[in-house]
Image (cartoon, rainbow, N blue to C red; front, side):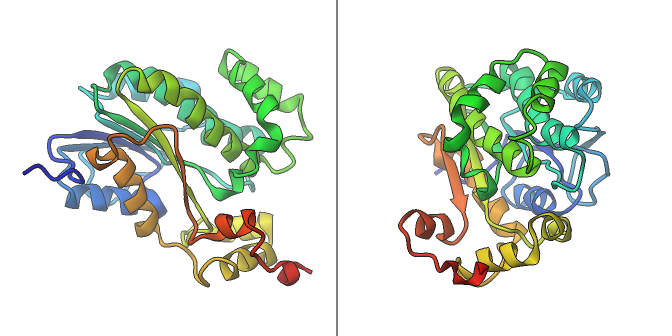
Length: 270
């Protein structure tokens, strides 16, 4: 009997695998029997990777070069790479949203029927309904530079570039899933709570210790681990999720569910 969670025979592309969730993901994919793993990152990962393509995901030309260098089919594309809000806003929007979109659109014809695109978003993007009109407008902007110019023209939305970029990822996941689903290719995202990774100090710098620690306290009292996020990503990329499409899956120990049902304690923020 075929293991629906397995990756035997599958060729996989992962962005951002030098550390954190991406590093945990390539380890997990090896355990699950992935046939070939290609990684796009600015730094070479030390994990079980078959092909490493040095790629600056803030540079569309570098992304296009990487796309041209990827061999064969891509059964699952994991758009995992991301940067924190400590970087310039244009860099955050480029890496977190535009690179993800460019890879997804450019590799779509290489993904066989039954394949998947899995994006790493964040619960920081869960406020997307408040900006759906603007995000939909941005999705309609044609071209990399034009999209960044649009962001420059909307500074009120980019006061927290990381959160807005992840709102865009969540909306893009839902918006694009209609077209990919018609091709029997699923598009979903994972939306983690604060993760215990080397990027956490940068998130604390931008969001503050108070916000991060309060979020953790209102979940289950600890940070989510890279392995736990990687497991959710691998599930959405596997045949076990064959009828899951257009979903932004919160991996937050119930934090957002408690938030939406009025069960969180805001006193820790005062």
